[in-house]
Length: 267
Image 1 (cartoon, rainbow, N blue to C red):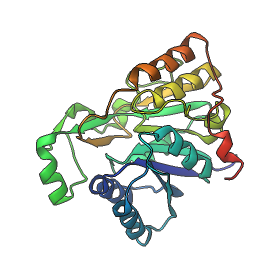
Image 2: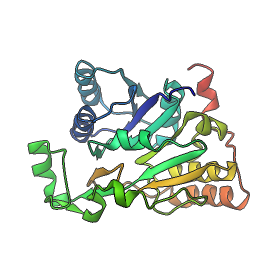
Image 3: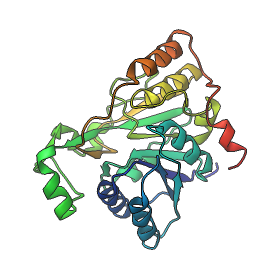
Image 4: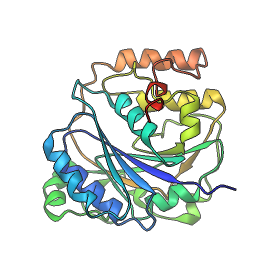
């Protein structure tokens, strides 16, 4: 059987202080992916300079996919990044999510054909941000200061073993902590680029995967990320994006016409 190769995709936009901690946590992984791609939705040169610095540190390739800032177009830049990915397995986080040291190892350990994975997100609170960025802290546990939803920080392979593969989409799914086969992503034509602005781009993708017959598995107590608090994004597109998502559910849509295929020709 062919060995899986993996690409870690990190989505970011104009927050180099947070991305610095995420990349620092990537360096501390007990198992590295084969490559990392930063999917950048139009950040300034400060982010570019940070990525250039880390390129000299990592022992694996670190690529920077950048697009012009024309508003929140995360679905577009993720399609571009995944199209370029050399790994046949995609692990996805956001640029404000610090990874547990076993994060990559856990996702790779549970690779299953025709199945995507999704893990837990612990929240780092607003009051702790000054300390976080001053100390550059990237390791947390159940008793750490500055976090909430702290039971999600419990790392337990034993407790994790009780979570089985499921056929339904879970409301616990978060696109900032997920992994899937690139082939499954391409089979539904990736992210729907009609979804712009904050909301529904990740869930709508996975709903189409479910419509295609892909299953899900929750990595509870493993595959953990720590989400850095930030102001909420504008929700002015939520209603329009929700309409697209509901149409996907109602009509069991599998394929988006406005997806990743346009970039695969040039990958």
